Structures are given as C-alpha cells and as structure tokens.
Length: 506
Image (cartoon, rainbow, N blue to C red; front, side, top):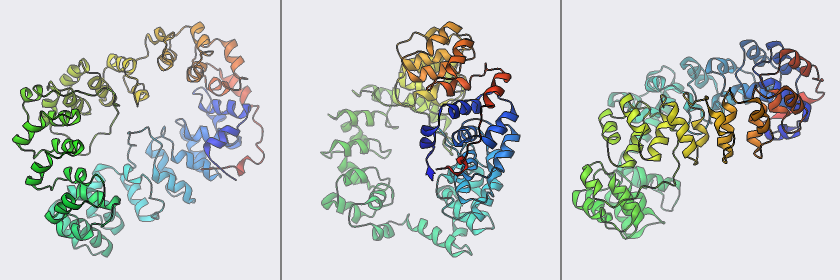
C-alpha cells in the first residue's frame, strides 16, 4: 500500500509519535537511534532519516536499510550534507536515485549545497532522463557548469547548455560542430533562437506558452511587432513585446504613450527609454508607471525626487539566492546610497554587500530595506534580525529566525506578546524561566505549545506529563533535558511493528 508522509504521520499512534520524538532528540544515544531505525514503525524511520542530522554510523545503517522509502528520506534530508546523501548515488532503486537527483527539500528560495562535481558527472552518465527530471540542475556547481561544454562525454556536454549565454563564441562554435548529433542539434536550436527570422517562423499563431515566451524574450522581426500592434492574437500581447529587449526604438516611443497603463509600466523600466519618454512618464497618471520610471538608471537623484511616486509596503521581502554572475559593485553602491527606497531595497538584497553599506542599510528608515538586508546578507546583525522579525509580518518572516546571527538572549521578554510567532521566540531563549516555559506549553497557539514542550527548562513533572499527551508527546520526547536512562526506558516500549515494513512512502 502506497502512503504519503502526511498519511503515515496521521496514522501514527501515540507510542509511534513519542518514539519519533526520541529520533529527533539530540540526547538520544547512537545505539538507540540505530534501534529506532532497525525496528521502528514507518513514522519513526521517516522522521529520523528526513528531519535531523545523523551520526555517520546511522548514515551507514540507512544506506544498507532494506526499505526503499527509508533510504529515500535520507536522499531528501536538508540537514545532512552532500557527502552523506551522495552515498546513495548507486542505490539499486530508481525511487531513491530520483530523490537524490531532485535534491533535499529546502526552504523557498534557498538553493541546496551542490553535489560533488564527480558525483554529478556520474549521475548524468548513468541515470536515465526520468531520474534527472526534477531539480537536479540546482545541485550542479557553477564551476562545473562553466566547463561542461568541454567534457569528453556527450551527455555531460548536453547538460552544459545551461551556461549557453555565458559561453564564448569559440565555445559555441565548438558545440555547433560537436561530434555528437544531439549536442549539435541543441546548439543549433539555441543559435536559431537568436535569429529573428527563425523565431518568426517558429511563432505559434494562437496564444500559448510558447508564443508568450517568444514575444517576451526572443528577438522579433519588425513584421511580428507590427502584427502585434495591429492584430494581436491574444490579450496582453502589447505588454509582452513592451518587455522584449529587441523592440525597435520607434515602437518604444509609441508604446510609451499606449493607453494601457500596464504597457506604459513595462516601457518605463526599459534602459533604452529616451529622455522625452522619461519626462512624459514622470507625470503619468498611473502610480505604477510613476514608480517604474522613478527607478530608471538614467535619472539623477534630483529627477527621481521630482517624481510623485509611492513605494508599496504591502509586498513581501524575501530571501533570494545569490546570482551566479556578481553584480557591479559601483552600481550596488550607487543604489545603496540613493534616496529612493526601491533602489536601496535592491542593494540590500546583494549577499556580498560590503560592511559599511550593511551598517548603513541596517538602520535605514524603510522597513523593506531593513528586512531585505536581514533576509539576505550572511552577516546581518543580530539586532537587525530581531527588529525585522518584530516589525515584519509578511511572507517568509520565519526565515529571519533561521539566519546565522539571530539572537537568543533576552527573548524571554516576549513570552506575553500578543503575536504567537513572537511569543514563540521566548522558547529560543535558554534562560527562559521554567515557570514561563511550563505556561507556554498551555499557550492558545499550537506552535508555541510544541516549541515549549522541547525547551530544556521545562519542569520535569510537566515534561513527564506531556510524554503521554496526544498532541505534545512528539515534541516532549525530543526535549534534550530527558536523561539517557529515561530515553532508554521509553525506547524499550518499542514493539516489533508487524507489517510496518510493508508501508511505502511517497
């Protein structure tokens, strides 16, 4: 019977959830972890292999475990490094290999650490296309991607097309003359996509994803542009071509006065927008157009200040992976020193921002600047991280608390805060008083209760009580304050899960 992880957890009884808590407990001895792996029911094996880092001996045992799905959880575990996960590279089961190729389940916007280059090459050479169909590309190092086009194996060269736009002319020519027909054909297709005449011949007549991609991104002939202007095949096609880098200068001028504000907004962002069009859009009646033109790179600070733009505050401020091509330091500094909040937000998201600009933007008057800096810079100060968490309640807020410098001291002061996410910070403070921790195990919010159940300062009587609580037995059993003797006693309740090895997980 095939069961999802969610279904397995829903069906786990109190004893299984308590054992799964032991599987997460940092105080659980290695021999107990090995027994949980060998004899635990499916829910326990799932939590152990998926949700924590693992000692080498446990990894060894997972690699040899007879259950396919147990091994697959290690392949997707974000808490173990590539060197441990890659040991599954030649697993006999397709399911495990496909999960390894798809990569660990990372938080939104966070890229996994690349697999070793030699492992990536081995997987490309030996895995089928269906095994590499997920997010495998994200696990390829930038260094390998840049050199794949020179690899002696055609399969590897084929994956190197991900760096096509960054290859030299000589490298592209070599791929066009590659001895492998598949590599030559891929190089030819990519070359054709730069040819407006070929793009016109490939343009679907009816609206579809392929037509949208071409109108937005591919070089267009004048004939295609004119057909969109006079007889569009679908809605919003003028918006699509307004974003296209190949748009002729006279059409840029034409669309800068388009009656559709969405078209004018797209045009306002273009680097090739002329002075007259910039001046006209700077007094546009639409606020989105005003904001778009106000960040145009050709404007002076005085010209930006003269535009009556409004900066939105109802948007999310996220963590973003660092780009593979570093941004120009002078442009970043200019943005960071701008009076325009949107430009400062742009600079705040640069992972390599120098210390003087980090210090400056950490005290910026704009919430978006501060939060963007906190979300992205590896050295974001502790005070900034805490302030951002307290002030920002939008998407990806929880990521702030995972940043390296997020503080733990004096968080107990928030135990009575009205926001449950802020109250939960009190449980991160190692000095939170036992009475406060105990009170938080009865908090109205389930996440706060669960976090408090794992706090090492939880009074022993309450901890013992929670080990038999239907809701909180799992986090209570993960509490590092449990002594080893108690952990071993709880582990002795492990019974042979008859038939559980037949549970399969997806």
